[in-house]
Image 1 (cartoon, rainbow, N blue to C red):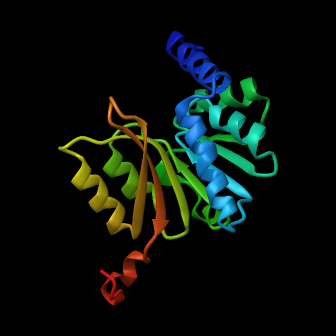
Image 2 (image 1 turned 180 degrees about the horizontal axis):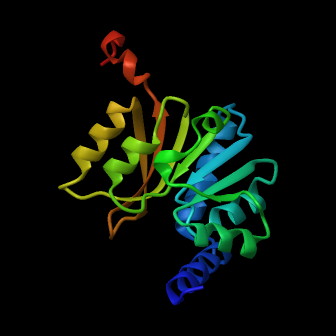
Length: 187
């Protein structure tokens, strides 16, 4: 394990142990979705980092299957080893199995690099519930991000995770299927 990977793993373990604001917000959102009458059987987490959301789900939602996709094989191996859980995989987000996504009740997308590119390549028509736990909005990128979400057929609610750093949690809901945009009279 490289020093960077070790530091990231330790950071995520500490955040999980200390109930980070990001994790607390995630728990509230999942509870809100469940309380709204939607069953969640499977969560897929794209760019799952070192897997701390698995621990959050295991502790708070043990009945929900969690599948984590890491951005490197080494990260997925570390997650499997550390958390003693086999459902961590390595795949680039633009090559994920679309069939698996059909049976996903909640997609968690952790933004690693370019938010617009990741939104464009990951979000598809199969997801009625999507959470982006942390995204930094600036004057320069917010219009482009919200346009990308709308182009994929999603509306959003946002919650501040860190107001001083302008870090938000986005909760997305399906407005329409993108190919039906021209038929949607509400736009």
